[in-house]
Image (cartoon, rainbow, N blue to C red; front, side, top):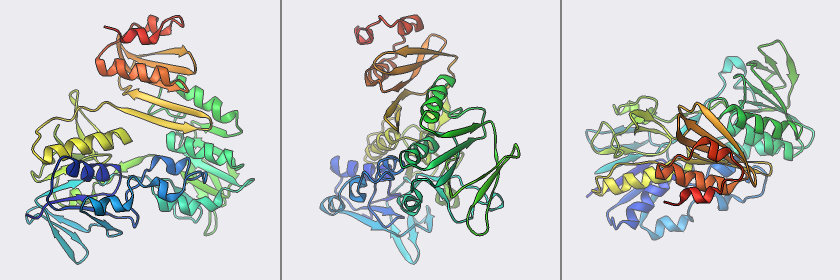
Amino acid sequence: MTGIVVIGGGQAGSSLVARLRAKGFDGPVTLICGEAVPPYQRPPLSKAYLLGEMAQERLYLRPERFYHEQNIDLVLGQPVTAIDPAARQVMLGDRVLSYDQLALTTGSLPNRLPAVMGGDLAGVYSVRGLADVDRMAKEFAPGRRVLIVGGGYIGLEAAAVAAKRGVVVTLVEMAPRILQRVAAPETSDFFRALHTGRGVRIIEGVGLERLTGDGRVSGARFTDGREIDVDFVIVGVGIAPDTALAQAAGVRVDNGIVVDTHGRTSEPAIWAAGDCAVFPRDGAMIRLESVQNAIDQAEQVADNMLGADAPYDPKPWFWSDQYDVKLQIAGLNTGYDRVVVRNGDGVSHWYYGGERLLAVDAMNDPRAYMIGKRLIEAGKSPSPAVIADPATDLKALLRP
């Protein structure tokens, strides 16, 4: 028996191998990590870790000894170079590993600025891995000037850290508003006010023409003709699924590694989970970039590799920490046509598609988040008027 090989040392990969052992699988298990450190949390990288509030070891999802104790072969710092589905083999340079079943948990890669726009200048960073954050940490000194390209959650989190460290922050977003791809205007307005109130300069509806500098970035020119001086740049313009290995191996790829409801790819012995996987839900193919999905889908795939034959039914949730605000999101707002604003302990935005409750954004309002999440998962949709009424006892909405 050649066992199970998992490629990708992130949240999904770590969760998958742990689940295999928890479910009693006693065959060989190998987890291959391209980085030279054990699997670690990524969300704190742009927050607590960048602020210096979290040591590297606290990022680790499990102590390195866990893998040894569970008889999991943890391969560090050796990226996979090729997969041969016919021979059921994985190549790591000159080393060859055979497998009975293979799981791809390769995650995603940050979109980078092309060289023609100055993306290869020194002082230009992306926030994705531990090494990225370690490289940029020295830049965060009071009085230095940073340009953040992209007004999504990664860009806003980086802006919050920079502002807290005394860095002069300019954020540019090409879309008409920050968070346009992922949130309602009401949520964009909330976070715009939060950041500008702390001195962040936000420029919306304007693109970056190019970064300037001789070897190292020193300025930026925008599409409206404005130019600014900068000391460093953080690029947060989204991520793309890491599908290169799968595509080269002939596995079907379409905005991610295509899997069925059970997590199986077009190759029967190959599975996928996490950011890299696109799967069917409610008649569409979706890809979820979240910790929740990485854990839950990976655990379901592990179960199915062991014969469970059960479909994956995601219950999406997300979060973002900015300054003293914790944003918690339940559900998916795709297709919403109305937003109800509710003021309570904090503030929450409730997304409706017709009369159906789709999602909730809760800012410093964990009660609204938890109740909204339970309502969505139970398929319950209180009327928008009930949610908007500050006298409504939200907890009562959960009663049968």
